[in-house]
Amino acid sequence: MIVFYYFYPGCSLVSHIALEESGLVYEPRVVDPKDPAQAAEYKKINPRGTVPAMTIDGELLTENIAILTYLADRVPQAGIIPTGLMERAQCMSLLAWSASTAHINFRRSRRPERFSDDPAAVESIRASGRAAYWPNLEWIDQRLQKQDWMMGKVFSAAADGYALRLYDWGRIAKYPV
Ligand SMILES: N[C@@H](CCC(=O)N[C@@H](CS)C(=O)NCC(=O)O)C(=O)O
Image (cartoon, rainbow, N blue to C red; front, side):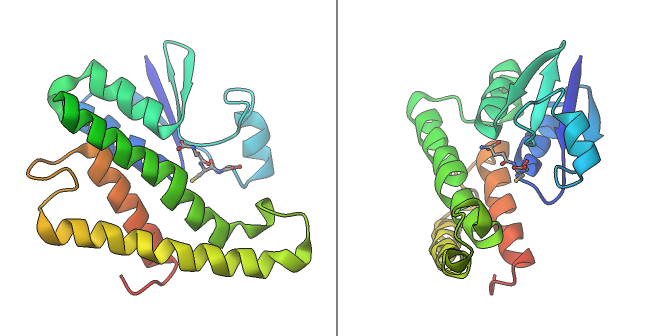
């Protein structure tokens, strides 16, 4: 049995899209990590307190990239991650960049206090995160000018789901997307 923990507008949207595409039956649970009571309760399940997380027959799996890989391997016909050797590697490259570069630039702009305990530094961290996120959005846009989907001719729930998540954050943060 799969239980899936998520929150909008969190990065859990990416795993959520892939889970829907997989066709697997799951129990959805909304968790607001910013709500202290919910966060305390949730940490009993996922001690990191982050979403997405999933339990599969009681075993915890965290991190978008791990969840996406698990779902892609479990339901290969769902088109979550391409199956060819190089296509798969290129998709993993894109997912890693999304999670470790674009997401973190956006986080710097939204949660600058997490990057320094010096209150005087917060505004400059926010501004540099905001500035750094824009080229990330432009890079996705340039890719989609040349092809229909992030991985080329075929939809990938993982790669296109991440692009949608990053675009939607741009929309929420009032970038001219
Ligand atoms: N590297 C993780 C990031 C997970 C993450 O930080 N999720 C955010 C929402 S976008 C969260 O749960 N934040 C709550 C917190 O850090 O307390 C992944 O890709 O799954």
